[in-house]
Image (tube, helix red, strand yellow):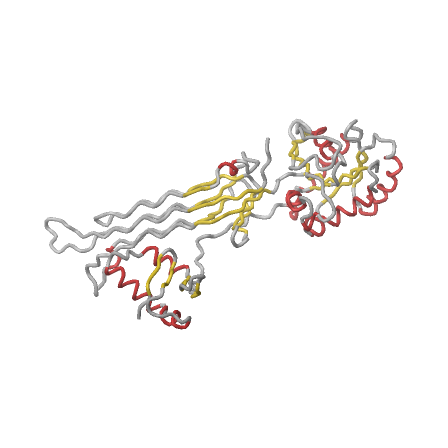
Length: 427
């Protein structure tokens, strides 16, 4: 199975339906008033956790998700139907970022967690909504509000109980292959494992835990050297760290020094991660040079107050005892509230931003007016309707746009851009 843990996608929420401009035309109702209904709301884009998924592979082939538009309003004050939300299933541990701003929009952890990532546009109001004592027969109605559109980055952080960390080629893949049904590639060269591998370890008939083989770390991983950030991301949510060192030292590395180097990388990346419960495992006990390093490693474990297990992943020497200790430790950790995963951060797309209006000039010298609510107004105004245009001009004056543009030096005849529309400025 291919493991995909980071991808980019685009989402576009549904547009609101258009409001209707209509009047009552019934036989016994002379001078029937406005009766145009409102449009329906466009579909929200909602991300929801599905525990049946464990990779982001689906998003490699599905890059764009678009919500349905709301229905248009109709005569006799009939409202258009709201569009149902567009639900996108993601695996547990998915973190959603806005690519443009870098903001984390959602951290989806548990089954059933969900978040509104892009909000559907509201329906445009029909002409019945604009009737008042001054204008009893308005002819204009609003277009539907455009739905939000976002470029997203999805990252997957593994939800494993136990994470294996250590330098490349210390035997992490051999261990996970020995204790589970996982079949990672195993070879005697560095970075054989380039993607995390999950293995389910059965401890007895009813109990099991998930072990993740995190690819080998190197110095500078916390700063992103090699594939550091990609690898460290997956250790963050593990309940227990299994720190493997090569007790044989055959590659000319000192296992004690290796331990301290990896610990420094974990601390640099996350203090919370550095405090995670840890077990020190000295692998490759089957090699003759391992015995010389065991006393120093045992002393290290005692000094750091770590459980210490010398093993051979190849011959399985010491492996059953290690697995039993891991299972017992995980049972203890379940009772510790600080080890419980943080609740999902859910982005509230319904929160309106302040209507801040800015005026700038583009490369061609045209004037560009930006403001969230103003851009919505432009998108929802029917400029083919005289009453709609007059309403827009009234709001233009109300917001003091003439003064803002004059302050930037605008002259009659110059072009003003608001959203997708452009206007020729005149006094």
